[in-house]
Each structure stands twice: as C-alpha cells, then as structure tokens.
Length: 469
Ligand SMILES: NC(=O)c1ccc[n+]([C@@H]2O[C@H](COP(=O)([O-])OP(=O)(O)OC[C@H]3O[C@@H](n4cnc5c(N)ncnc54)[C@H](OP(=O)(O)O)[C@@H]3O)[C@@H](O)[C@H]2O)c1
Image (cartoon, rainbow, N blue to C red; front, side, top):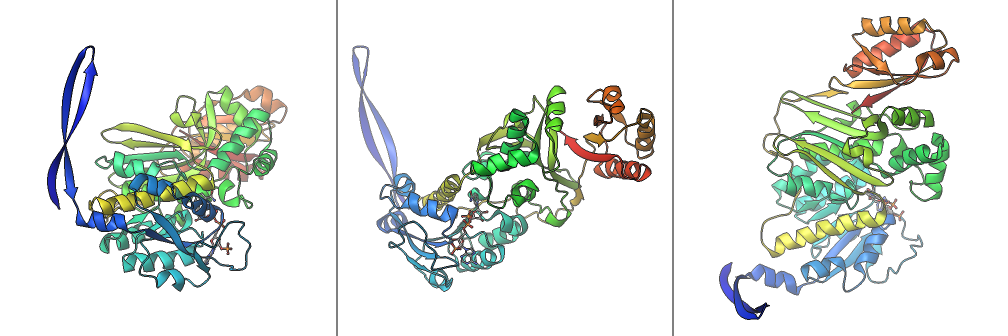
C-alpha cells in the first residue's frame, strides 16, 4: 500500500473575515481496493423465507444499503431453498434458484454466502463447508450458534475467513457489534438481557389490559408479533439461544444448553404482574449469565426486576442488554429486537463490514470471543448459580398457621423469608395466593424447600418461583 497526501482547501467566511483552511487527506493507493471496487459483489443465499425475502427486497434496488455504504455494486446471484415449486410472491428472475446446495457450494465466484434457513443440521454443514473453503459467511441461525458458536468461530479464525452473525441476537440492534467493537478491551463479568420481543410484548399486554396469559398470547398472535408456532419464544428457548451466543462472545465459554435452567412465561398470571408493580418491580423474561475466576452461572426465566433497573423500562417489542464490565461498570443497549426486516438489516450490516474490511485491507471481519486463545480456562458451569433473592408465589395457603409451618421448612433448607409482598392474613383466610420474598439463597436451596413443602401438603400448595434482580 502506498500513501501520498492530497490537499483540499476550503474557503471559510466568519464575521467579515475570509480565510483559507487547508486539510491534508492521506490517499491510499490500494490495488486490492481498486480491483474490489470494480467488481460486483455476488451473494449466495440459503433460504428464501421471511428474512430471506426481506433481504432480496432490500438489495434489489441499485441504490441499496450495501452500495450506498461501500460504493460497491452487489447482487444476489444464487439461492437455495427446500421446495423449488413454492410460490414466493417475489420476483425470482434475477437469480438462479434451486434445491441442490452445490449450486452455491461449487460456485467459486461467490463473495459472501448468507445462511437463512433456520435448519440447524443443514446450516451447520453449509457454514462449515464455506468457512473451510474460505468463503465469507453471514448467518442469523441462533439455534445453531447457541450450540456451535465457538467451533464455527474457531474454523473462521483458522481459515482467516470473515464470519458474521449480528442478526442472530436482537435482530437489527447491534448488541454483538457493541460487544465486539465498543467493549473489546473490557473484562465482562455479567450479562443480563430482555432478549425475546414476543414474550416482552405478551407481558406488557397482560399488565396493561389485565389479560391472562392465553388472552395476551392470542392478541400478540393476531397482531403478527409471534411465530405461527410461538413455543420457542414462550418457553424461554429463544432467549436461551441468544444468551448462549452473547455469553460465548463475552466470556469465551460455552453455556451447555442442556444444563441451562430455562423457564418460560406460560405459568404467569395478571396477579403476578400486579403484585410486582405494587412492590416496585416489573416482570420480564430475563437471560442472565455471570462469570468469575472459578464459576460460570446462568439461567433463563421470568424475574422480578426493580423499577430502577434499566431493563424494567424495556417495553413492547424492544430488547435490552445490560453488560457489566470490570472497568466500565454497567453499559446498556436497547432497541427494537423484532421483525424479519430488522434481521435482514442485521445481515446487511455484516456484509457491509465484510466488504469494508476487504476494501481497507484491515484484515478479516469476524466476531471474536474475548481472549480466544485462553479457552482452557478452568471455569465450572453452575446451573442456576449464585446466591440471589427469589419471589415465591404460593397458592392455596388456606390455614393461618401454614405461615409458621412454611418458615420452619424454609429454615431447614437454609432459606430465610425476607418479607411478604401482599397481605398474608387477608389472602390466606380466603384461600388465595401469597407472595413472599426470600433473602439470597441458591436455586437448589429454594427448590428443595419448595419440594418439601409440596410433599408435606400432598401437593395442595402450588408454587411458582421468580428470581429477583
Ligand atoms: N423471522 C425473523 O424475524 C427472524 C429474526 C431473527 C433471526 N431469524 C433467523 O433467521 C433464520 C431464517 O428465519 P425465517 O423466519 O426467514 O425462516 P423461514 O421463513 O422458515 O424460511 C426458511 C427458508 O429456508 C429454506 N430452508 C429450510 N430448510 C432448508 C434446507 N434444509 N435446505 C434448503 N433450504 C431450506 C426454506 O425453504 P422453502 O421456502 O422452500 O420451504 C425457506 O425458504 C432462522 O435461523 C431464524 O432463527 C429470524
């Protein structure tokens, strides 16, 4: 790369005075850049569903976001789908479309391959093949990355191949970019997020309209804010996938998905949200992970979030992520985390980064874990993790003396009751529900206390546990 200086002069007028300001701009004579700028970037796309179609639509104009940002023309030239005969409702005449993956895998002219199938096994082999071949890959496949992130990043690192997956968490909200670029020197100790838009909206609908869970779910479905099969969202799995990806990047340590305690929102009632609000909390579906020198702990579940916490204000279809670092303390990112259009924009952001890194010859664009070489850290995974406070909902507490009985069982399991969130006398006498808050204890302690309570009351007392942030 050869560098020279070009002088650009501006005429400045300030009050009656006129002056000349000269600025020296370094000009990089970059052969690679010139070659790159002359060609049209060719994209191979796996999957032409909800996100794939939005990507095609966004890139179909000559003035698309990639060309606007990089000056390089771009074109989706090949697409692979599962069912060739499906009516797509979009113009497919500008690219070759087929069902044989070789259409993309055998094409050495492709500059970037985008994977948007959602099929874990298929995506794994496609991405692995492309990265090994040295073809840059962008994917939004959170289910795959939750399990294979470090393995795929390792292949990308070894083969020095660009690999982007911004759209897998927070759709278009640049959570991962913030971790990668904004906090690259930081030691991250904790991440806590509202990472699923559908469930956040459902909880808001319950609170605002006094809906029960199923009513709110129906409304969210009607408004088009859930998947046709919302199970992955409401049972907490989608949040778990995203938590695994963010933790993988933050801690360079995989959370074993099969050991991660995951609770969804389906067991929640309007009364839970009401009691929370009366006590100065909001209820959110939270993904949380924390690391120290010896332990990594993580959980996903509905939690009581104090009104003063930044995540309490993350409403509707927004997502939010609080990142705690040793030096910078708490950072917070929030934005609209839903929608295929946003996800397509996240994919485009990665493609722009890949093109820019090639133009500037700055090296390969990749998301990297912190300390990628120190993957031999001896950190144990503790599901559920630390000593924290819990809120417990107890239904059918009909006898007044059950309060003493409860205290005794909790005490035996080293759980101390910090206080009640609603009026025990009033609620218990009419056989209603009691909410209590514990002092900090472990997940194992609270679970064994509650199991014992249910056993001793022949399962008459029904329980629900919330973590408290
Ligand atoms: N939807 C969102 O808002 C959103 C947001 C963030 C991230 N994501 C992620 O983005 C990815 C795509 O989501 P989507 O909602 O667009 O999915 P989708 O609507 O179900 O579309 C999937 C596409 O992939 C194709 N496909 C599936 N399995 C295939 C296989 N084995 N071989 C070849 N093609 C296959 C399908 O082909 P046919 O059309 O022929 O059936 C379809 O075109 C997923 O990983 C998802 O988690 C989605």
